[in-house]
Amino acid sequence: MTKATIIVPAYNVEATLAETVTALIAQTFDDFEIIIIDDGSQDRTPQIAGRFLVDPRVHVVRQPNRGLAGARNSGIAAARGTYIGFCDADDIWEPGKLAAHVAHLEANPHVGISFSGSRLIDEAGRDTGMAQRPRLTGITPAHVFKRNPIGNGSTPVIRRAALEAIAWRPRHETLHDWVFDETFSQSEDIECWLRLILSTDWEIEGIPGLLTCYRVNSGGLSSATDRQYAAWTRMIEKLTPLSPAFFAQETPVARAYQLRYLARRAISDRAGNRAAMLIRRSFSASLRPLIEEPVKTCVTLGAAIALRVLGNGPLSPLFSLMVGLKSPAPRV
Image (tube, rainbow, N blue to C red; front, side, top):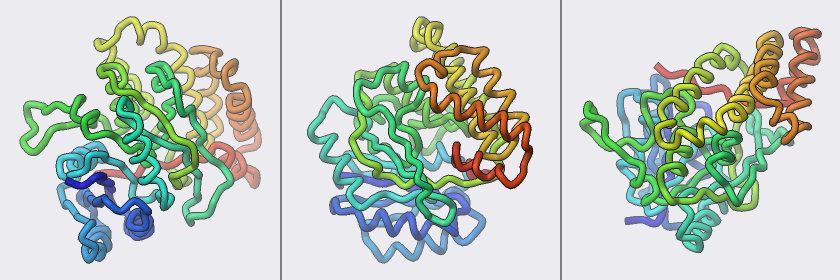
């Protein structure tokens, strides 16, 4: 056994994989392994991953494409660590991130998921000046459902026992258990976090600091908002039997937050009409985001209206920067 495992799902990431793995190798905590899951890449990802095998802490698993959830599940199955972290192959961990999470989990045996805030970097790796600074403590299922404080898939480090508590094996699966639901190509993160906090006693807690550099990419977002919303809705249908009363009470507000998030994605892709439609639907679902987060909600509304009125002109990159979000990697 090793103390920690870092899983790197990798699909056609020849442009960023080396930077990601180099940053992980540089962690100040020294008892860890890195497992790169080459998820059926068709570019130079396998060759780039192979270069890091000179470091005995680095391992590469190659498989036919199973999607992000499937790559993570394969990594969990191969992991030897007591604690398991995830880092997408275009993101970067700060050198002290793993050490901070291990210390947090060691000192707090009730915590199943440890996470941190994130700095946002652009496609060239430059700091955008923006950050995700989520709620860190007192996290309830409602917080996860409405705002997902974990934020992105490259920030959590999770206790193996917590993952094992929510693992299952579908009848057709012959290789390993599932922790992430591979029938979801979107919303697989929040489905997993919400399932854990609703069905186990493990707690989710963050630590101070912007310890993940989360890369935001432009383009290709608005066309995915329908699929994202459909996946989010299917997540509710799947998890409702765990706590019918919870979902009956919290879904309208969570829906408003989700539609606001999708409006921001549409703004990032400079799709003004779609952004305006989504923010209107958000207000129709609930006004709570406006009451609870007035600045972010008003910025989203203003950017959507301005983009719709002004169109995709000289100022449109500013609107995208205001709500910068990552475009999901395409998968076959």
